[in-house]
Length: 272
Image (cartoon, rainbow, N blue to C red):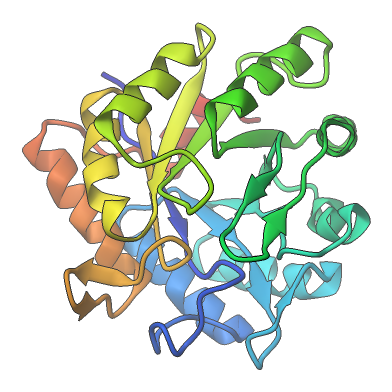
């Protein structure tokens, strides 16, 4: 079985210091959390950025500062900016981080409810536009899957030439409005993937470590971090993103999976 790639989603766009005081806002805090995750075993930093007051932003200059800080501290880590941004942002606003030509970036091929009145809008035209820009810049998309129909859309866009093979997917499981974080639904998504694909699993909230375990034993990869879950265990806040990564490393070692370093992750994902 391939070595395990661990992605750390260190801050997201919605979680705040009220949820967990260690949530990073400033560039220094983002660097601190990226380093904690990297030192614990993460090969990929999934990156959102904030203003110093915690406001989510897709500003290219702010991303540039965060990317530079992370590269200073973790020179070989893979930095994966989000093109999701925050609910309500325009497509052009969301694509700003691509100006830095990262190795990877996220791309969501469908619309999903985020609870209440929040709708994360991704039309098929949006997905095509994002894919076209990424192809032009040499950025590999991580295709974010919130429901099974998004796999079908990705496969259709692959046949049309927008997504290149082999594709890499991230199953985001347990979001209100998206696919549930169950063994049945995980197996359904896994069986739906085209041959040769790679995949990561991000379980939301209390689903983080059960879904990570399923991914580990199934030959997939794992995403953890404050964007998805701020607790180390029930009622106990994680002190850092690194603590969440360390827990995945312990589970993986118990199950016989070795951890990929960034160079090994690049080879598995076909980067470079």
